[in-house]
Image (cartoon, rainbow over all chains, first blue to last red; front, side, top):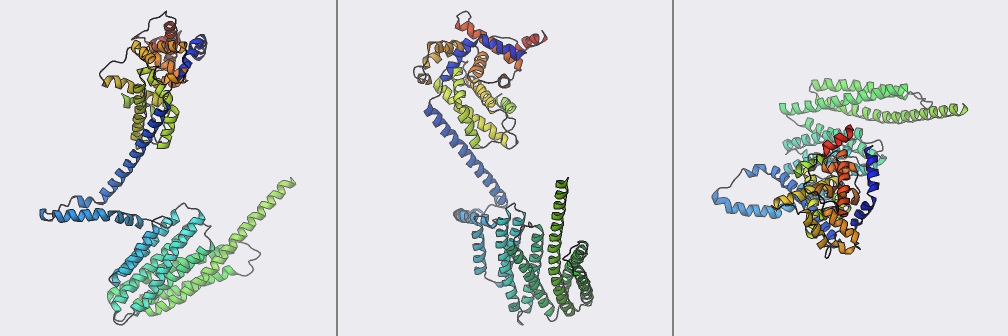
Amino acid sequence: MQKQNLVLEEQGFSEIINQIQVLKNVKPKESWVISCRAKLALKLEMEHKREMLTKDASELRELFTFWQAWQPKRAFRPAYAVAVALAVVMGGGALTSLAALQSVPGAPLYPVKIALERTGLKVAPTDSLKMKMQKDIVGSRLSELRVLVKNHDSAEVKNEKVAQVVESIHQQLITDKEQLPQANKPNGSEKSLAAAKIVSARADQVKKAITQAKEKLPSEVNSNLSEKLAEVTDMAEKTSMQALEMMIAKKEQTEADKKDILAKFDEIIKEKELAIKTLAAVGQQASKVKSSADKLPINAVLINQADEADDLLGKVETSVKKEAFGAALETLKTLNEIVKGAEKIAETVKQQDKGVIELNSAKNATSSALIDSSK
Amino acid sequence: MVIVSCILLVKVANITEQQFLGFYDQYSDKLYRYIYFRVGSEELAQDLTSEVFLKSWEYVNRDKASSNKQLANPRAFFYQVARNLITDFYRQKDKSPLSLEEVADKVIADKQDGPLEQAAISLDMESVKAALGRLNEDYRDIVIWRYLDEMEIKEIAQIMEKSDGAVRVLLSRALSNLKGVLNGQLEPQIAEEISVQEQVAGEEAA
């Protein structure tokens, strides 16, 4: 109602309103509009940069909180000032290096990170430091792998980046494996044992990380990457076993050595138990899926192998309890072969089951469509 | 006062520099015109217009950290900032706003070297401009917003922090006053104190 009144009232003032609207011609000078816009844009840009600088500065301040509390003695102040100046000059490079250390494959600073690692390894003054650096490098690759698996890249990009990291891990494992026999020298048995322990732990870490990555990676992982992951897992397994063999081969084992070996066996037994359970589950699942192509009792073979592996695992446990580590290791090697073979069969069964399920779904869909069309 | 009113309008501010410059392109001409009719000086209008955008960016940026919403009504927001800046300007300079006659005279005087030169100005336009300058602040604002900037009543109500009904009554009175001034029948109603709310309530009750 009020709106209508207003419209009517405005109609009464139409002449004045038309006169008012002529004032729309009042406009600012174009040169002022442009220069004012330029000033405003500059101001916004400067503020943006200032914000970024403030943010960076506060992050750096947090990093160096420990330093703020420390003050040099009066006599050392000039030297301190020179040191700070040098640090500032070199700071740019250091900050770049710091940023590079956080990078993952695909990032612009990633090649810098790799170059820094290689240089570090080349100039490492002692073997123990070199071993530590290698450990850090593998740790870094595994962290990258975890980040890449979580990233929301496309399957193609993810495949490429993960393959790059996995290849790097593979190379490190090859280096580790080559170092093991060299470390097994009579003169340096203590040293070589320490090295074996480090390599063993590292190989186990790699195995776990690759297994987790396999589980989390999208189904579109290409065959090349799939093969590479399997190869690296196999290599990690072999390296781990070789390292364990070295630990067992050491003469005059101390209680600490035995403890380490027991812990290692304990870990392996748990891992194998899980693998055997998975194999048995796949065998039982396979028997539920009906397929005309499934003429051979492949599921029975799988279940049988799982049983055999389980028996062998029992023997390993018994030998370990008796501290007959040599016998336990030999049985473990046989067990590994059986598990590996069974895993290959399980993979085939899984693929077949997937095919049968897809085929059955397609058949069901076709039947439904035919029924619908006949109606 | 400026901050309080801006917070009322800036429901959420999370806009980029580019978006903000887009607002400048969209509203700078109109804001300049509004300020020009309020202060009667081209130079001052330029200074205050640029300050409107700088202040607005400060508010928007300040709120960015605590809020994730969008500028509810950018046009209303800029006009509110402009309005408050004009008030603050006169307050800080320790001088009262130009008298209505002064504004009218200045607007006419400025036409010689101001932006008005660029347009063909008729005698009618001149007299409307002078008449507009003789209205009180609220009347002048409401006429500019409604008929030059083509704002909806709701939007004007938002800037003036009044109800839609009160704005309609104000507009009606502004037009009547303008007509009176143009016809030489009415003296400008300086410092007119009308309880618009009461009148709206009366009209609604009737």
